[in-house]
Amino acid sequence: MASERALPLPGARVLPFLRANRWTATLADAARMLAQVAVLWAFSAGGGALQALLHLPVPGNVIGMCALFAGLATGALRLEWFELGGGFLTKHLAFFFVPVTVGVMSFGSTFARAGAGIAAALLISTVAGLIVAGLTTQLLARRR
Image 1 (spheres, rainbow, N blue to C red):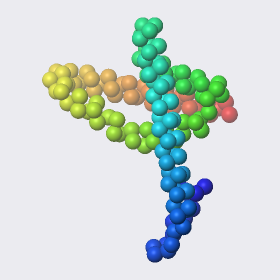
Image 2 (cartoon, rainbow, N blue to C red):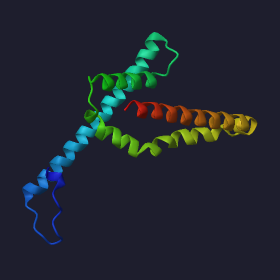
Image 3 (tube, rainbow, N blue to C red):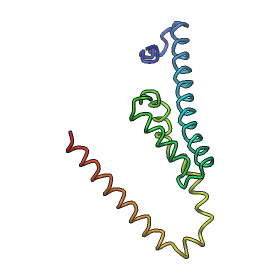
Image 4 (cartoon, rainbow, N blue to C red):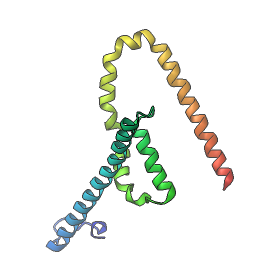
């Protein structure tokens, strides 16, 4: 692949067609990543539309995630189709929590009033999630 070629040494002459191939590969990767993110967003939006249409008690993004999982599990969708876009989103995950953090700051009085209960609920749910994930992993590891 053109993007995997070693960069020339400083002062070395780069042939114009090699430079064009690198840009073409970079643009192709960017377009592929944007398309993958768009498909992932479409699953989320489709889940939201399905939730609103059927008045389901489950968040729409969870429905979309379950639909994506079902497609991957059945083989109708391939993981390679989402690796670049999903990797980008995962790599920049902290960025998506900035609006949530700013929003939480406006609830200072709520946290002052019920902070101990909120902290306990977060701690218990985190521990429960870790236990369930660990037990599930052990159960699946034994099957192999």
